[in-house]
Every structure is written in structure tokens, then in C-alpha cells.
Image 1 (tube, rainbow, N blue to C red):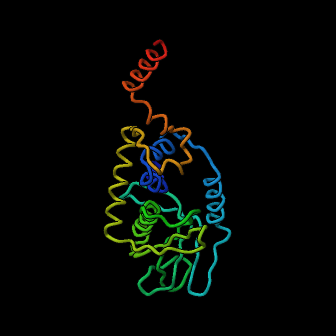
Image 2 (cartoon, rainbow, N blue to C red):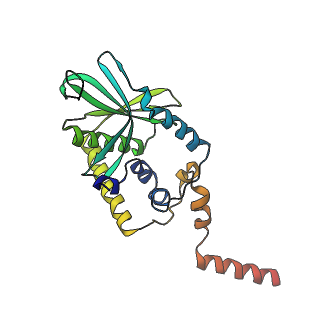
Image 3 (cartoon, rainbow, N blue to C red):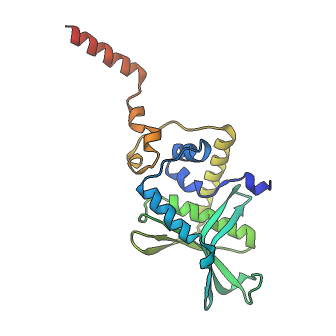
Length: 223
């Protein structure tokens, strides 16, 4: 087994940013529950990762399902798509003439979000490409299926610092085998693990309050 095979899945950083407990349940405890949203995402990613659809359009080379690894982040995974565009500031590619500048493109089912969860996954891919190809990857793109539009993302120092901090935290949680407690919020409604996590039940499980309520109910019923 290679060192990179011991690394955590890069896609997990998006889930970790969304909810640390969701990440732990899915990636550490191997629990998963597919709903319509996740099924649609899976089908879209299967097409994006179909390496038989690799193609070249003039000065644009499109590679699907490219494996990437970041030793700094201790994460590995696959880019949905990496677009290599002819650019004198790019890198040489085996079997190709000229120089090519890579840009990761991530495919998402929903719409652009206020949070940086999707952008952090893209940033991790860009950082991995930089390590592997010894070049700068200044930006990436996220294609949202619901709007059929791309969002271009600058791989800024701030985004890189957040990705590094989250990757470090993910690896520490994994090392400790730590699954965080529930922190219920509006984001729970869109979570495919809602029935496994049971955030609504957790919200009601203050044991002292539970006992008091049942004592009061029993006393009231006997009055």
C-alpha cells in the first residue's frame, strides 16, 4: 500500500465544511443514506469521471476522472475534470507539444452556495495539482447543474489557508476516531444522513429536562 492510499478522501473536505458530524458518519463510520439529491449527484459524477470522454478542442485539453494527491493536506481523490489550456506559463505534458496550464472543474448538482464548502474542495484539488505538476493553479471552476452555469473561483491565500486548516483537523479527528456531537441547524434539513444522525431527537434529549417533563406529566395525570 502506498502512502497516498492511507490519505483521507479529498471529497470529504466539502462534507467536513458543511457538517463535521456528517463527514465523520460517512467517512469514518461508513454510514450513508442515499436520497434523490445524492442519487442525482452520483449519476452526474459518473459521467464526469468517464475517462472515455477525454477530448482535445484546439488549445484546450479535457481530462476526466484524474487522480490527484496532496502530501501537504494528506488528502487524495479524483477531479471531475481537469482542463489544460495552452499557456506559456504552464507545464509540459507527456506526449503533448507546448505547455499547458491546468484548471480543475468540479460538477455539483445544486446551485452556488454562500458557504465555501464546494470552493474548499476545489481548492484542495488545485493544491494537489500544484504539488504534482510543480506549477501554479490560480483558479478553478464549479459547474452547477441546476443553473447550467460555471462559477469561477480564485484559489486565494485565504481559501488555501482554510483548506489547510480543515485538512489538518480532518486528519486529527480521524487519528482520534472522533465523531463530533450533533449541532442541529437549518443545514440538517438537506442532509442525506438526517435519519441516521437524528438531530431533532438530539435536540430533545436533555436527560434532566426529559425526566422533569415526565414527572410533571405523571403528577398532572394523577391530580
